[in-house]
Image (cartoon, rainbow, N blue to C red; front, side, top):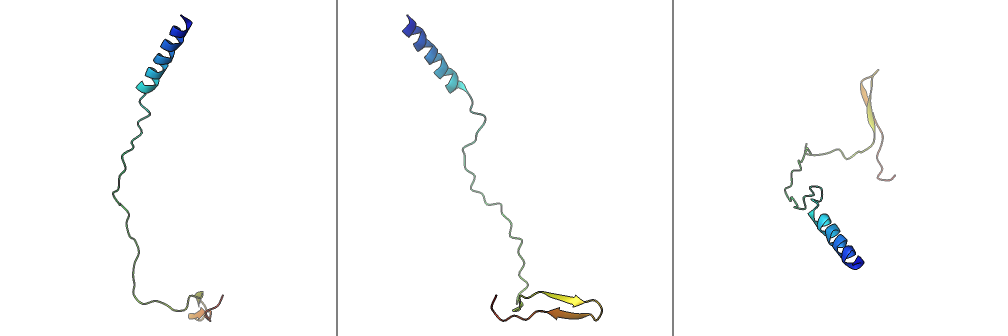
Amino acid sequence: MNNVRQLALAGLMVTALTACDGGGVDLNVNTTDNSVNNSTNTGGGDSNPCARYTDPTSNVERRGTFDGRN
């Protein structure tokens, strides 16, 4: 009789677990690409990547020299 009760209890537990909704998890994969390209291409470019600034007293642009090494 005890085995029948344990088997019935196990059956109720399995039924209760399978009846649970799972929390609304959506396993459908969306492959739509909604990314936006915000880059701008101004053409050309500056071959000197060194820092530069404009001297406020003389309004002259000061810039480092680039030798291709670190």
